[in-house]
Image 1 (cartoon, rainbow, N blue to C red):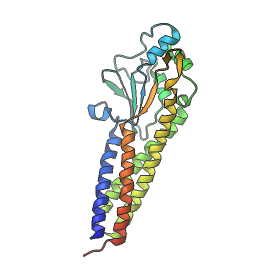
Image 2: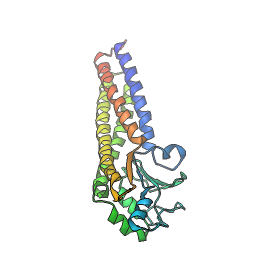
Image 3: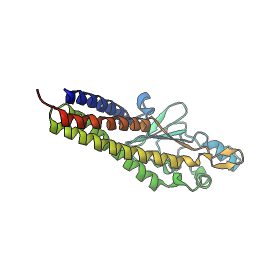
Image 4: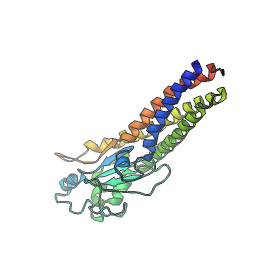
Length: 253
């Protein structure tokens, strides 16, 4: 009975982790009310217009898009750029938004994405006032977040496999569940760490001053998707030991 009790606990922990990871995986697949609020990272450029005005001494008319034009067409900035592991979406202050094409392991490239939306007459200003930093290094950001997203996807799949194997009453399957949970926890840890490190590096430009009383107005912050990934990592990790105990102690009646 001890093995059965352990497997029940492990299954509950795995199920909770999978539910959390489902939300992580659907983040930013569209602009609906549910998925728009789930993202790994957000780049907020709502205050960047004030920085442009301070730097150029003129009102930056036309800097922001108001029509939800396609992304990457120099039609204007959106106030919020949110990144999921399959897609990025950009939103205006009223909550309306538009998404990029989806891809497996979609990268976060905040500098390139914002520059691509910046109207042509403001591009040189953007290049000049944004300091040389990790934020400007799209190669670094792309590699870190693409790999991180792929690891999170594989970790999610392994967590699901562990749950399925755990309901099959056999020591072999319990061993498989323990192995899958362990691998899942490891991949989720690495994936979440890569995203966390990238966000921490990119957030460093938030306090950069373009004038005596005006910061750059570009902030990078973690979102609910990243926090859910960390929580799922904890639950998957906690499920490993019960699966191992079940493997060692389970006896058929």
